[in-house]
Image 1: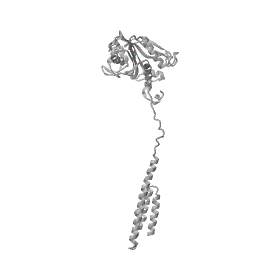
Image 2: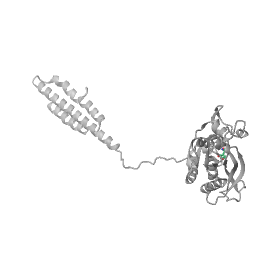
Image 3: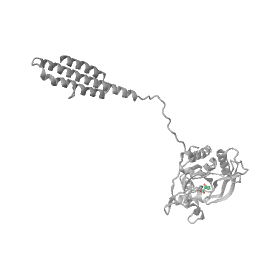
Image 4: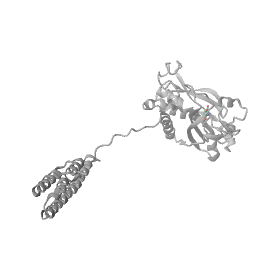
Length: 339
Ligand code: DAH
């Protein structure tokens, strides 16, 4: 029996030391010290031994059991340490590997257009200012020489919060807000959203953008208006661009005009873009009406000025040959990527 016990000890210790993982180890535990294990079987047969032999073998059996248990424990801890080391190894992060490039967006074509127009006028000393989109009737119409019942209001129906509070239909309202607070010389442009009660189609939207311009000083004439807007047109559409002014009517300017630029697609010969005209309408403009100046406490005998307003979508669509206004608002990345 002594030999049996020694054999089991040697065999078990070797096997345990070689166990590859926890499952292996558990199988060995069952095999040697489990209820039906080899060691247990020997212990059960102790009864057959003589009274002198029994305590001696008993002690040896206990030693063997303790040795095997200690070996389990030791190998078990060893296996855990090993598993952890392997896991850490597998999860190592190389922080020096270059990151996947994050997809970067860019400015919207309307913002790009506004920025280009801004930088041309800022080059001529114009400052960019902003005004509110929710506006009083007074600033949007009344102070712009467009009293209630004026026919010009028909073309600019909008969304009303109350009888005198509305979504502005034009950035011209900022002219008044500016002249109320500043005295000439004034040289400002004001880009922003405007609203009209229009149904959406390829050329209409209830929300769109305008850029307003205003210059007021002593001795400002129509020649200054033409000069400044010609510089603007060349800056935006190219050096060869010519401009022409057609008489028009706006309540807040007198005289008023619409400015066309020579078609930048065909140079003026006539093509699809300019519908065979050779010219493309770009903006409305004129000399600030004396009533408007007076309403802002600026003496029209001493000061004069010019103003203009253009649609940002229109300019962007012409320049980039966009044929449907809705594309500009849908935020389809395939469209936006092209700018
Ligand atoms: N506010 C006008 C519109 O929305 C555009 C305009 C015309 C603005 C003439 C001006 C101007 O400042 O002088 O149709």
